[in-house]
Figure 1: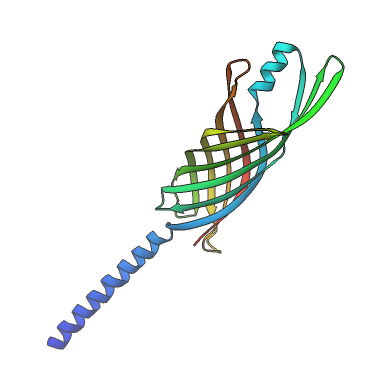
Figure 2 (figure 1 turned 30 degrees about the vertical axis):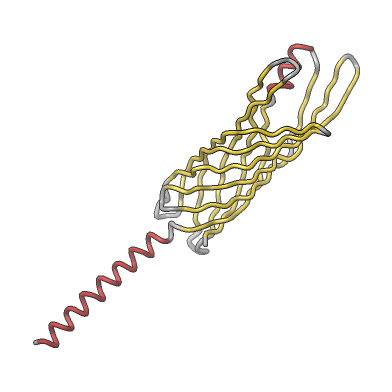
Amino acid sequence: MKKLAVAAVMCSLLSSYAVASENNTALNKYKGFYVGGGVGTTDFHDKVSSEMSKEHGIGISTKSDTAYKVITGYQFNRIVSIEAQYTSYGDTKYNIVSEGDTGKFKVKQQSYSIAANVGYTFDNGLRPFATAGLGQMFIKSGSFKKDGGLYRLGAGVEYQIKQVPGLGMRVAYEADFYTLEDKYNNKDYDQSVGSWYVGTTYKF
């Protein structure tokens, strides 16, 4: 009888350990550091050139470049991640026509940001999400350089590929909002630059 009792206790303990291990494994697959990258199209809303065009009758056309992202973050559970990004929006090329004269220049924008990534990871691997955070914008055009704070908003959907544990794909739109000061005319312009992008991540 004692042997049967000991065996029963051992089976119970082993069963409890197996269930706990399985639950921990299930939870741990939603946790961990991840890195990745993305590529997409730049979407720049330049109120400075828009207002100048209206006020002075200047013809201004722009052509945006490709956007690139470097991503790193930590996922705490099914819902919350903290994510840092470097984004290069490439060169926005300007073509100016004024009373027969033409001119060209380009503006380069890049940003660093840290944001909360909030969504829900379903059992099938899909995870719709939204991002919100803060960062720093850097602008360069010839010898002109400017930097300042920004806030970031975005939304998208990820898919964790079951056949390759840790590998994920995402499609999203994210935009950086910042204010550009015009000290000569004593004006502030609310600018935004964003990107539709496709990216991949790998969770360790």
